[in-house]
Amino acid sequence: MLKEFFTGVVDLLYPLHCLICAERIETKEFGPLCSVCFQKIAWNLPPFCSKCGRNIPVELSTENVCLDCKKRRHYFDRAWSVALYTGIMRECIHKFKYEGKLGLVHFFEKILFDFIERFVPIEKFDYLIPVPLHYTKLREREFNQALLLAQPIAKKFQKKLLTGVLYRKKFTAPQTELNAPQRRKNIQGAFGIRKQNILTKKNILIIDDVFTTGSTVDECAKLLKRNGANIVDVLSIAC
Ligand SMILES: [Zn+2]
Ligand SMILES: [Zn+2]
Image (cartoon, rainbow, N blue to C red):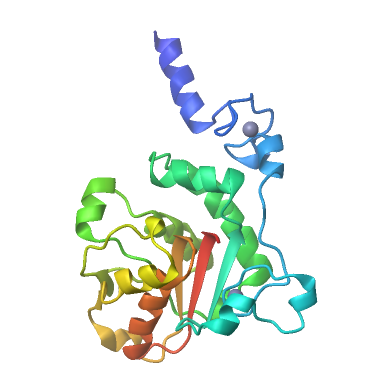
């Protein structure tokens, strides 16, 4: 029984089977994934749109912005995402967020660190702000995925993690079922600010798990800027 217990604990710490396909994992190099699944991840690669940070077709890259960002202005200055929100990465995020597989945070932090070191001018930011959850949501989920992602980044790059200044004052319907204009309307007025003095002329990096239409982080950026913030950028795992 004792042996079984220890095997169980070891399995938890170092999963032997791929989280996605359940094949045996031969190396820890790819975290909780096998090498086959890891290689299937669709990374978000340059050239990036200089606004939303999505990969843009090479033929558009001289213009720097994607067709979407040409049509609509954003309040944030620019966004970055590590991967595309599809396939394996989408499954990983779902397991993390909805199935509470929190061990995945170590995998996410590794790919976030790599991405930051390659692309993000992290030195310019004064604060990291994870997108806050409404307390009703937090009670239900028991964790804020954006905070779990922001914590290791703050530690690694020695940035101040600001929680509680930007807060969620309105409980909103989930954005997933809504189209872009509905999302913008749904999220309007959802956030509030406390102690706005500390935001004056500060550069802020908002952290979230997924960037879809950008309406949530845009609403955050709008409020942060109205309260004195200088640059507001966004970093997410997937877009
Ligand atoms: Zn696999
Ligand atoms: Zn764009």
